[in-house]
Image (cartoon, rainbow, N blue to C red; front, side, top):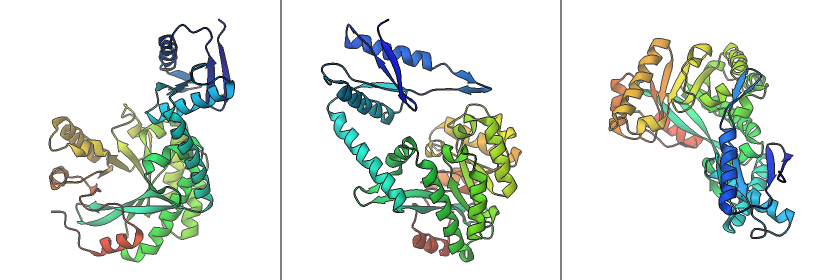
Length: 359
């Protein structure tokens, strides 16, 4: 009673607490909000989960007028997001510098889209049966005039927050198709060019149409395009996912689940969706020689995939011991720094033309 809840816009809300007794009291209110929002709720026929990020500013320590208090709470909220969501942060003066940098980076990213500053690197995928390069994953890169080479881990979340990830994802898909066609004569006829899809792309309703147009525009065969989707994206809206995946399957593209084993806890979707490939997450591959649990998980994924008729790609292969384990357990394809870092196009051509030794 006496407190206020208001919607600022989009998915941002403000709570004004009056006559607070202590900072600890504010923290307890934030924790109560998390407790309430941690419970899933039913939206039509879909279970929805919310991951709130809360930024807190205090009067008068963090500002003596509404504009400053809101700005500082906003800075704290972005810090909470950066810290992994599902947490709250009290404002501190250091956050202003971080907020200023983020705002500047948002501006740079918008300009980067307009000026075509994004490009791709290709990380080779090796077929362990044929002992040759059988595919590549197209990985987004950004070289900014202001910031230099920026890690995708830093700029991709910002693209998601400001709503540009779908547009940039289309740029990646377009460049990947063009890269394949420029290399086609040097590649295996069944070569797979893998492209990651964002949730915004996948749920936007125009994905199949855009893929079809890019294939037609570049002359690329659908059989050579592999689209990677995470488990969490699929399960955001299972009914829409089935529709979209069926549309893509009708085009003839290959559909892969990226980071398999780290997302959705149920395996029932494997029989519901038209899938072709599972990509074993690098977190399982990393300790496969030292951790019995990781070894068992990788072995189980490979065995299950064989039963279901699915291909498998193991990510993050960095040592000969990891490779030997995967070969012994009949893994189909691998990628990782043991073979190659992500490469620019000319480097990738050189890599393909060299003999690849997998033993």
